[in-house]
Length: 139
Image 1: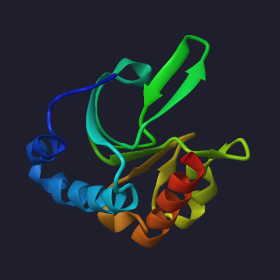
Image 2: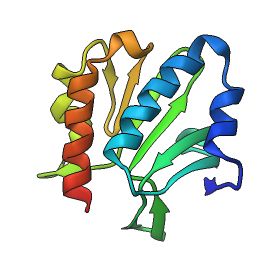
Image 3: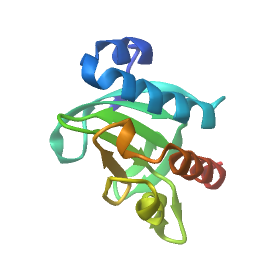
C-alpha cells in the first residue's frame, strides 16, 4: 500500500450514502484524538492481496523480515458489509484491539483489526479511550 495524493475528504464523499455518515462520525473521533498527526489516504494491495482504501491517522516505522515499513498508527476502511478499524498499538505484547474487545460493543476483533456494522454497533466513548491509549503508547 502507499499514501496517495487523493484527499481524505474526496474519498469519504465517494463512499456509498448508507455508510458515509457513520464513516464520517468515526473519522471525526479519530481525528480529534490524533489531532496534529498526519491524516492521509492509503491505497493498494492490503494483507491477503485485496485492493483497499484506508484512511490512515498518524504514522510510524517498524521493522519486519523484509526491512523497515512505513505505516499508519490507526486506519479506517469501509469493507463490503462493515467498517474496519486498524489499531496498530501493542502493549505488553498484545494488540490494544484485543484488550478493549469486550468493551467496544458489537464488534469482531482480529489481531489489530476491529470490524463493526456501523456507528450504532460501537461504544464511541470506549473507542475514544482506546484511541487515546493507542496515541499515548505510540508517541
